[in-house]
Amino acid sequence: MDMISEDKINSMSSMEKLRFVLDGVKSGNIVVLEGGLTPEEQMKLIELTMTEVNEDFPGIEMSGYPTKRGFLNLRRKTRLTVVGPAKVMRTIKKEKDLISAMISAI
Amino acid sequence: MKSKRRRKGILSRLIDALFFRKKTAKIGIYGPPNAGKTTLANRIIHTFVDENEDIGVSTEIPHETRRAVRRGGIIIDLKSKSVQNQNPTPHSKTEERKSKAKLKLDVVDTPGLATKIDFHEFMAYGLEEEEAKKRAKEATEGVIEAIKWLDDIDGIVLLMDATKDPYTQTNIVIVGNMEARGTPVIIAANKVDLADAAPQRIINAFPQHPVIPISALKGENMEELYEEMARRFR
Ligand SMILES: Nc1nc2c(ncn2[C@@H]2O[C@H](COP(=O)(O)OP(=O)(O)OP(=O)(O)O)[C@@H](O)[C@H]2O)c(=O)[nH]1
Ligand SMILES: [Mg+2]
Image 1 (cartoon, protein in one colour):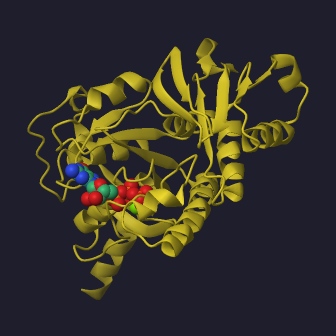
Image 2 (cartoon, rainbow over the protein chains, first blue to last red):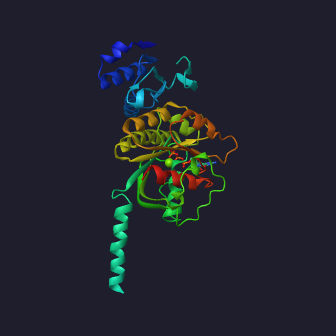
Image 3 (cartoon, helix red, strand yellow):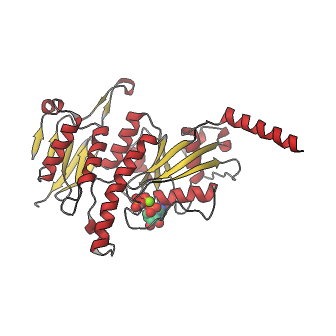
């Protein structure tokens, strides 16, 4: 499991972040990002994933808390995002403030 | 006679220019695979365009739609339809003039969005291995196409299967992106004809957007969806 601090995430560009996450997941890791990915980044991650899906890599499982909204919806604050290989990670229960994931051996 | 008709033409064009937007709104039907997007798109076309025209095929196998398809120039005109809302829900009681709602739009039926596509899943539906792999490849391209289409979309109907857990990351990501872009979203809680449908779960999960329970297959509560579309996508 890779736990990535908010500082490290903030030092990366969007594309670097997505590449970093997807490379980690493709090598079998669960990647936990403190501070999370924005909805736009998550959509880009889905797109990037789809270009790399093949018979051995069916894709990703992604979980996260929705962005919190500030005053007048002007500021959005992303929170934790968890991304893992679809082959080993299953989100079993997901609520606004609770994520339970099951991880099985490959 | 001739000139009279001509004048009428100018008049109605003037009315059109005054009351309807010049640019036709492009409305995307989005959602996870198998939510009923093509079923809904077909129903809209059957009701307002042509009973015999289909935008695409709907089946119980996921990722049936693997190319986005647009049908242009659909006029949702509730005045010409007999609008009877027998059991109005809290959403519908607001506006008086709603039954006169009219909206011109293009409907885009999109491939289901997913974070994973496993060809084994298609084999479980009886497809041969080669066919399943081909379908998986096309499905990945379909997801990318659906995402790319978002750039050209003026509003979305996000369809969810009301018998399933709505709180999935794909649903959250779609909603989050629309909010970031300021694009209007209507959530349709589909398949309410099924006994285990729980539209309330969807309402609880996405309280910031209108949720309309419908059955695209049986045609239940469609008027309320059309009214909401006319209201939001105008
Ligand atoms: N019971 C019930 N079944 C429905 C309803 N709407 C669609 N279905 C069924 O759900 C299945 C999937 O419908 P589609 O319209 O193909 O779904 P889709 O979202 O276009 O699916 P993809 O193109 O694969 O992403 C089909 O078997 C439909 O008959 C509904 O309102 N009620
Ligand atoms: Mg379809």
